[in-house]
Length: 155
Image 1 (tube, rainbow, N blue to C red):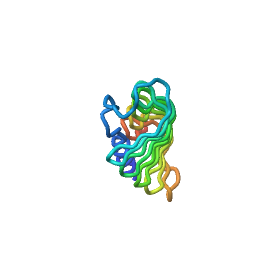
Image 2: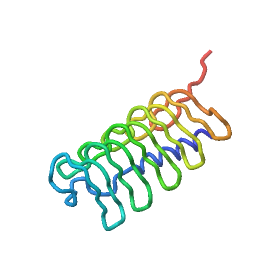
Image 3: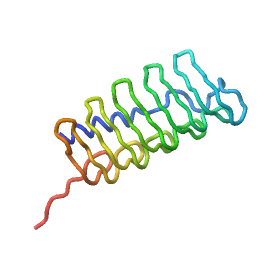
Image 4: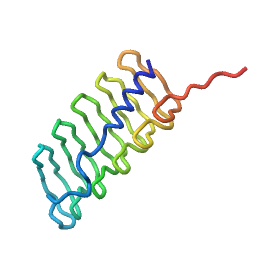
């Protein structure tokens, strides 16, 4: 059961990408340290701080499909504490570095199962726990590349 859950979680983590080219923010005026609201033809929008034509500081980006990120930005990338929710019910809250979950963070999938622990490059790495909504604690321990690490007992 743990293996099916972590695969699902990894797939969500890998999909947390910014849909626009980050170097193409012609809609943002080239003024430093401003706050504004921007909407693109595809229905996506950004409300918050920006600098030199990129989201920078605190802001909210909403994708056309309803997914949303609320948190800190650095030069057009999610960076620092943030909250990313997907239309399907998946939620991640925690630290981002260079647009991906990195450091401490927690997630809940669309079935209500949760992971709380360390992330590296958008997937679970380090200490963490997964809890099933029905089963309770299913695994606590080390994670490597999005998978729980099981150790065999030696005699």
